[in-house]
Image (tube, rainbow, N blue to C red; front, side):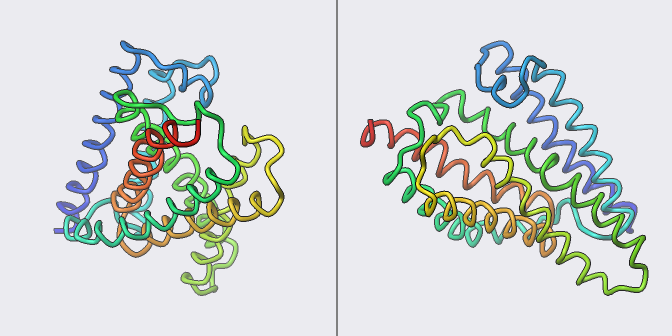
Length: 232
């Protein structure tokens, strides 16, 4: 029974990965310069399959270790709750954007944004969350064999939650942003990552990814279109 469940979870990951790969192909045929901001000169059609393979390794590890799940259909019932939490993070982002606007071209507009942001959300989840979390968990569980697993996991989540805000701070295009706004934005991004990793722990990987997609829909696509009308 467990093997059947694991196979269905792997299939769910592969289905999502296939969609991401198809989206990447479409944005290669109808290109966007946004990929170069993250991947440099490396083609997205090379980067994304590598991320998919790394993610597949992560998924196999979390299933074999029993740390997390990839997908449980019943967990998607929590999506309305995730959406409410995502709105709170959106309001924080809008607050910053209104006081000290991000650059005009920070958002990619429709229709390409509907493909680009799911791709980048997928990449972020694998690179900033799954890989470092699994490595850190593996190291700490090996070193502290008799320690409480829940405490180790909490420490790992706290540490991994710092990666995305630190990355965004390093590449923040908003030059001259007031310090208080920097601190507020950093705290917001840290909490966003923390909530995501809690969702991973409490529910599964697909739920965590879905939460990011809801946020991206609100922030990058919906607000991304509105801000051009009212801020510029």
